[in-house]
Amino acid sequence: MKLISKFWRKLCRPSKAAVGTVLGLGFIGGILFWGAFNTGMEATNSEAFCASCHAPIVNEIRETIHYSNRSGVRAICSDCHVPHNWADKIVRKVQASKEIFAFVMGNISTEEKFYARRKHLAVREWQRMKENDSQECRNCHNFEFMDFSEQGQRSVKQHSTALAAGEKTCVDCHKGIAHQLPDMSDVPGWQ
Amino acid sequence: MSTLEYIIWNVLGYAAMPVILLTGFIGVAALSLWVLSLTSDKEHS
Image 1: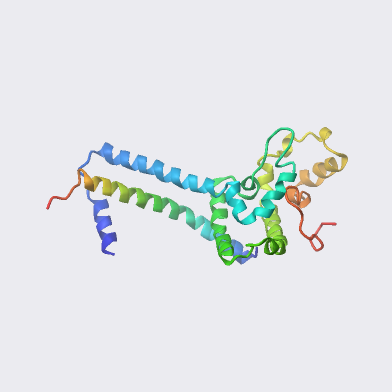
Image 2: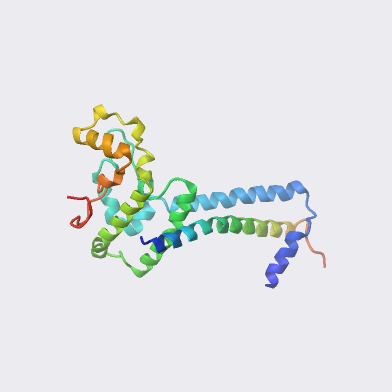
């Protein structure tokens, strides 16, 4: 308490330093704080960070088009699993603090535990993507610029009807595009 | 995720934003005050 009141008194008292010096300290301090914060955020978005818990699933992406393709563009975990806009990203990161608890408790500490929990994790992620209209897919795949002449018959049929009308969203059909699917026996709408 | 869980995490998530900014402000202020106390705002006993 004493420390807080001392800090408050100092904040209220004018400094003997020039205004430019005080402003400069604030400016440089602000840059350093924001730089450190952003670096921390980016570090928790890296593939290495995700793999520290989700190693089996991170390896699976190597077999898919989102990892290796003719154009050399690839997606990493956070491209699809972390919202890109700042506010939603912070909400997701705070929510992820629950996952630290799961890490400490060792919920997926072995491959066996991970595979046992896989469906629960997948269903939760599909639900999240359904609720945000597959925003993370749409960050790269823009419906407006889809060339139906380049798509298969079934894709054209689905994209031009259900997707165009907003009845369905990407993840309703495109499950398991970057990972193997869990047991899908009781997943609604899946045959 | 249940509705209750959704509300809790959203409230915590949005509450985190002002906390982050305020923490940054307090950190920068404390550091600046310390630097100033070493130089121009040095207390003479």
